[in-house]
Image (cartoon, rainbow, N blue to C red; front, side, top):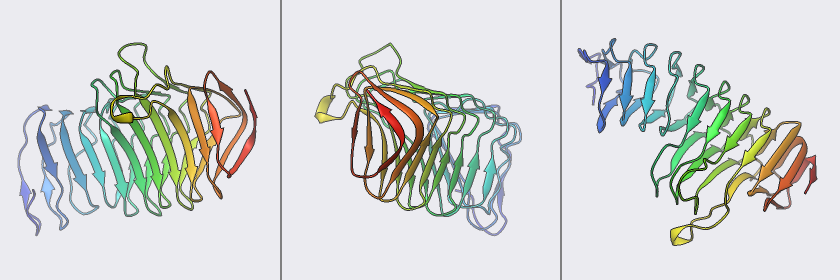
Length: 263
């Protein structure tokens, strides 16, 4: 923990921080001086919009956690953040413009979450092109826009489930929950889940697009989904062009789908 009143910790003269470390930004102008830090694994970083940590040089942050509770933050050089949880809230904004792929990573019985909560909160991953599910069973990749938050995945063309590992209870579940909550998937052409089989403890194996409580999910003009459930509760919406339901995909709910749906 960085102490308040403009105190700082110096220096972290290392290129790599190993697992089980934590860097925490204080709320009163604290500073972590780590200009050589480029790769992190298993590290938690929290920004509240007042403290400072140099981040433009960071290229890797795997199996860690980013928590943004205020301010605007851009990891301009970050190309790999597989397995990292991200939470954005209180009107904070986070952008990761240089990464092209995000993967849940290895391991079973583990959920990884990307979430934006609250009006003005934005998680901008608009340059990602591919999302990849876990390789173990009973493992979810959870993507949530809540209470007016927005997640930009507008460049993602494919969401896929790897061929390796036990697929029982494995899923990618994407939700827009609450008025003005939005997930942008306007380039998504293929959403594939290998299996909808349930896992241990009755964990669902269905991947999903879920819009509820006034939330909105926007997809591409031509989307094919396999073993994916589309759930649209009133007064929520899913926007698209043509949505093709394949091999176990289902549509349910009383909301609105602005798309031509076929199976």
